[in-house]
Structure formats: C-alpha cells, structure tokens
Amino acid sequence: MCVANSGGIDVAPVPKEHVDPILENYLLALAGVDQCSQSAPETVRSRLAVNLERAERAYADAAADGLVEVSDDMAAELGTLAQVNQESRRRLHRGAPITDLLVDLEQGTDQANRIVRAAIFRQEKSAR
Image (tube, rainbow, N blue to C red):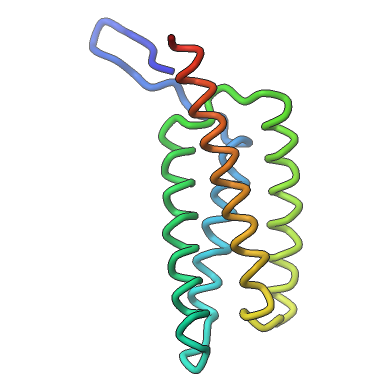
C-alpha cells in the first residue's frame, strides 16, 4: 500500500504487532543455526541454513510492506505462529537438541511464509 505525498511516494508503515511473530520466527531460525553443533550431521546444518534464508526472506517481505492489510484469518494465523514461536523458544532455552527442534523451526517458517504470501496476494488483488 503506497501513499502519495507532494515529495514522492511513501510506503505505509507496517503495524508492529503484525510483523513481530515473523521477526521472532527469523530470530529463532538464527538461533537454530547458532546453536547447531559442528558435529551435527551435514543434512541438519544444511536444513537449518536453508530455513534461516527462508525465514529472513519472510521477515524482509513482511517488514517491507507485506503485512499492511491483514484479514481476521491472517491475524489468527499470526497468533498461532506467536504461540509456536513461544514453544520453540522455551524448548531452545531448556536445552533441547537442535535436531529435535529442526522440524518445529521449519514448520514455523513455513507458516510465516504462508502468511506473508497470503497478505501480499491480498494486497495485489485489492490493487487491481
């Protein structure tokens, strides 16, 4: 959503509460890479790195302007993502092996990407 002014075009600010779960997902993905032991299997390290890239992309898209207009369904999904993030964070703080958290981190990133894609699709559709 762009707002015109006399000096050019400004992008409408993205509400912080919409972006927070996406940012937290990115930070958890980063922590997953950071906490991964060098002795972990290469497949685990690789999956964590790919997950981090996907989480970073979701956050960048959300922060840019991907979550300006959020439907009630998307808001509910963001709430669910926040809960998933909270549980992953708890498990990480309790010292759960990163290999046990990997699937949870990937699922959280999948959910974050679905939310961002749906929001962008909604904005593109309303712009037509």
